[in-house]
Amino acid sequence: RQGFKDAIKEAGLEVLYDEKNANGEITTANLIASNFVNSKEDLIYSIATTTTQSVSQATGDIPIVFSAITDPQSAGIIKENITGISDRVDIKQQLELLLKINSQIKKVGVIYNSSEPNSKVQVEDLKKAAEELRLTVVEKSVSQISEIPQVTDMLIRESDAIYLPTDNLVASVINLITDKAKASKKIAFGAEAAHVKGGALITQGVDYYEMGKEAGRIAVEILKNNKKPSEIKYKTMELGEITINSETLNELGVVLPEEIKNKAKMIN
Image (tube, rainbow, N blue to C red):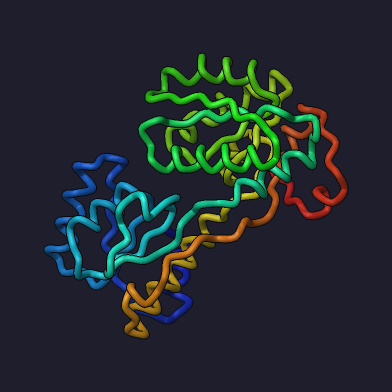
């Protein structure tokens, strides 16, 4: 959200924002979308899949710019009035980074919410990338937060390292998962920097602030330069900088290769 606003400001546009948060509730998102259409907004910026689906169903006329959607195609939101930025990442590149840290890793565990479409897409991408690198994926799904502690314990026992997708349920208890991984001396690899702040060892993921800025630039093209969303193909972001949690690094006793250490940003 802040990245989007900063891009609008940098372009010199005077914008009045009507901000609403659906708090993950589809019914609320549908109501907000309906209100935006009735208010005849000039453009709608939607963050994440469910909110974008709501505004997509509400209007085929008002331009919509989305961000933080893994697979816009399967989410059914590719329409003439919609474009934006996907947060789908190159998981093979992430796994290659993991193997540079520990080439002995053979089994990569993943925990995700089975009812979150974005998470399912990421797990399929993970399995495809793992097959190319001759790795085995240990897959565990959950549907509610109370299942995570027990499932995490099982996953850690069966895996050499843990991959954390961009999953809302997983993100809500990230510290619990990373604490268990650290206690078992297993590397937790995050799909984004927030996971590393939550205790995962490392990520090379998408910068969501920069994603917001890129979405803001698209909005500028539409609002200022009169481009139609259909003229701007949605795109993905390149992987950002490598981020490492220095405390987790010390706890695990991992020795980083020089090529990673020299490029990485260390955080606590």
